[in-house]
Image 1 (cartoon, rainbow, N blue to C red):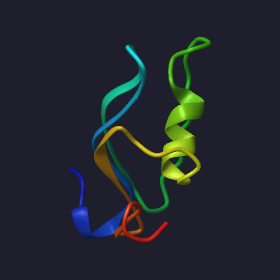
Image 2 (image 1 turned 120 degrees about the vertical axis):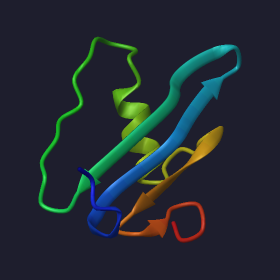
Image 3 (image 1 turned 180 degrees about the horizontal axis):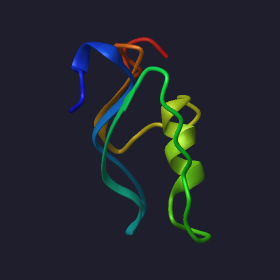
Length: 76
């Protein structure tokens, strides 16, 4: 079970679209503090785009993301 007060990273319907191409489509994550995860997938799966959105290097087309409880769109 996920404890929403102890989340290091949370995304809700995070999406990035380049023209007609969807790089990331509706990503939902809930990663608690102290946990370790990896992003695995083939070329073009959206791994780098996801990291770029979480670090505000790339703006999401839609959806939201929080790092340590701070909405990244409000406080990059």
